[in-house]
Image (cartoon, rainbow, N blue to C red):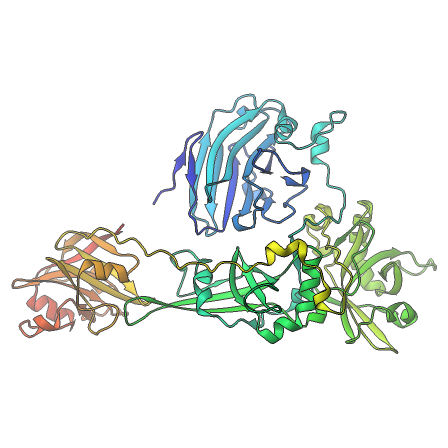
Length: 638
């Protein structure tokens, strides 16, 4: 099926099951430098703040729902914006997809295009235009909400006033006394602002496997199934979505209940004992205004039941370890900083010289996670190499070896030039008499441009810990803690129109069983040889309600006396007659043998008067059948 080509002003409703779309903005001249960006707009078609302007120096929205991806060298004339639709805040009505050019105009860069892809890479819509002339900023299109559905619109509107004019129209603040483009393209200042309701990722899970298995209750199966497309990608589909662990103190499952949610759906609950053990951590995060978040893996399998329906099985694993390792024992740094990605464990040296400073960070359980900062410290001796000093809350607690320091210093120096402190994940283990610290962070040679020059990565401040989990005030987040309504089962698949008499269809059932059916009057005879979801003789309403998709034979070729190599192919289909009986057969042989193994549409009622049965060799078909033809063309029945 070809994707729609939209004209200027046309829109398209996106499929309801889609969770993510990729917007590819392209231009014909690969030497042109086009800056692609996105604007998150409210109902008034204005940004809520400058943080809603997503571009190469601010490559993700604060909630993470919209992300910018720069053009790669091999495809220098396009850039990508991806949008996680369920994560877009409710007060964002439109994501505007725009581009700007610093010198010249869009009329000189050739054909402009916007391509919308779903999360499988399938093209949903395209917009191509050559109408740009003097514009230096261009609104390619929009992804927007309307009546509860997401839509895509081709816009094709330009501005001669460049990015500054476009941004001003959408409410982005621009300093009139300074160079507009310079203001917009300046790297954002380091800040530690995290909007209420944003994700707070559990710390200990960063290195753990998804090892906690949910008990899947029947009422949550529709929610889990709705995360997948209607057609599963394979027999054992797997997803890895982020999930939130949401306390539901006023829900029907009791005051300690913790739901597991993703994409606006509840997919299960923590076991009762575990929910209580996690209450202090999760309620502290929620009381601070954030949503506890971790990773997951989900598998689903569908089987045909004996009544012809589908039996769904699901497994859900989430990444949670010890609650004591879910939150760092200290607060984030007060200075402007960026948190390095994790890569490998490195032991800090000379901690014994700073035990007094370390002792106050050793938790009751003897192990904890914390924020650590790395600093360049030039050695006093001229013969010694500079080393990396390791600090916790500004106090020196050790250092890295000279060899390891050399692998971090270029990155520390670069970030310091941006007025950023280098922070990383740390682990402390100890007792009342000794303590050790390890860090986990990428080294300079592993740092990507986003780490070195992108927006600082920060972690939200949390309220102080309380000993009584019930003492946390959850009032501000009350609306988010209400139990979600169960996801309803998907509507039944529409039954396609019944093909005319004599038609032959091929279909799968049970994940890997292929059948053929032939219409004879007001019923269909199939290659089924046992009772179950598919019977030997069925009417169309019953057959079509049990099968999702059919392929119908559209072309046939006669099979000569000397045979035809096409009939030796696995899943080849032939039709033939024996007397007044019109039959079809399916080759299930995997080895291309001349005889083959053929399932036929011979029924128990007709087998007594025919010279072959529901399982036959090719020699039997050619000996007794006349007008033998092999199917050479198929199309999906809609």
